Image (cartoon, rainbow, N blue to C red; front, side, top):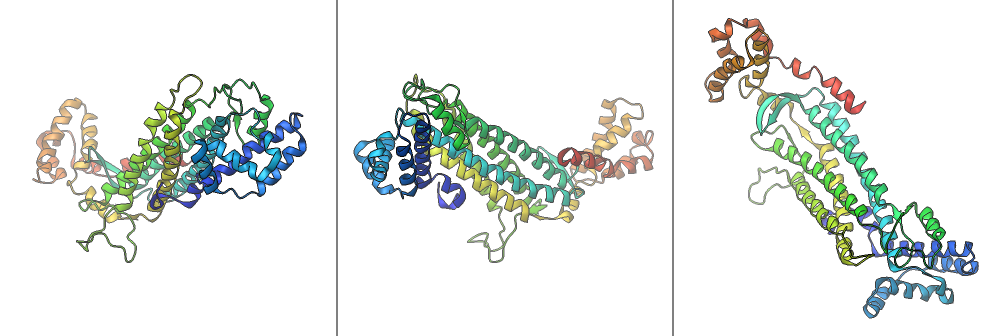
Length: 433
C-alpha cells in the first residue's frame, strides 16, 4: 500500500492497531465462551475483557518482543499479559496461533469486502444516472476498433452497469466464501477446545464456522476471494480503456474532466491526457497480479506450513486497498465525464454512410437474391467510399444492379438510425428493470 493509491477507510482495516484489536477480541470471546462452559473462572474472563478493552496496545513494544521471540502472536500475547495480569494464563488456552491469525484475516477480508461492495453501489448509481442521461445519444459502434453500426453512448454505459452488477454479485459470494472462523487447535481436531468456543467466537464476529480446518482455514476460500477481486479489476480496466479510446484526439467523443489549474504536460501546454483512466489500467494490473500467488497458496504441506503467510501479508491489504481506490476513482471519472454528442454525430457520418451497409445487405436479401450476391453488391459500392471516393448512398443509387431491386426511397430508408435504436428501451428495461 502506498498513500497515493489508498483511501483512509480501506487502510484502517489493515493497520496494526486494527489487527491487534481483532486479535484481542478473538482471545476475549474465546475466554468468554470457556467461562460459560465452566472451563475457566468467569471473573478471569471478565478481567480479560475489561483490561484488554481499555488497553492501548503499544506497537513498538510488540515489535520489540517479537524481535526476541521471533513469533508475532506470542509477542502480542506477552504484551496483552502486561495489561491483564495473572488472569492472562487463561488467554489462548488450548488455541494455536492460526486460530487467531486466520480468524482475524477473515474479519479483515469481510470488512474489506463490505467496503468494496459499497464502492460498487456508488459506481452503479453513477453509471445508471449517466446511462439514462445518454440513453438516446447516438454514436458509432466499433468492432476491431473500426466503425461498425450505430449504437448509443447510453448503451455503452448500460453494458458497464450490467457488468459491475455481476461484479457485485460475485463479491457478495466471495465475501461469504471467506467469512469463516477456525478456533480448532493445533491440527483442527479440537483436542483442547470445545467446538462451542469456536461457535461463540464465530457468532460474535459475524462469521461461519469452518467445517474442516487443519491448523488453518483452507486456502481455496482465499483464492476464490482474490480471483474475484481480479475479475472486478478487469472490469475496471475495460471501462477505463473505453474512455481512453474515446478521448483520443481523432475520436474525442468523451473525456475526463479537466479541472481549473490542471496541467496535462510539462512540455506541451495544450495537452489534456486521460491520466485517471490510464492510472486505473495500471492499478487493475496490480490487483490481477495478486491472483496467481493466492492460487498457489492453496497447496500447503499436510495440516499446514507457512508458505502462504508472507504472501498474504502482502497481497491481502494491497489487493483490497488498491481495488477500493480504483473503484472510487472510476466512479468519480464517470460522474464527471465530459461527453460530446456533436463529435459522436460527426464520427458517425465520417465514412459517408458506410455504417449502414448492414441495412442495405438485409434489404437486398429480402428482395429474393442470395445473401452472398447481396454482399457482393454492397461491398463493391462500399470499397470506393472506404478509399475516399464518393458517397455510399449515391453510389448505391447509381448501381444498375442495385436499382433493379431497391428504389431510391428504399435505399434512403436504409440510412436511418431508427432501427438501431428500436430496442434500446427493451435493453434498458432488462438492465435497470
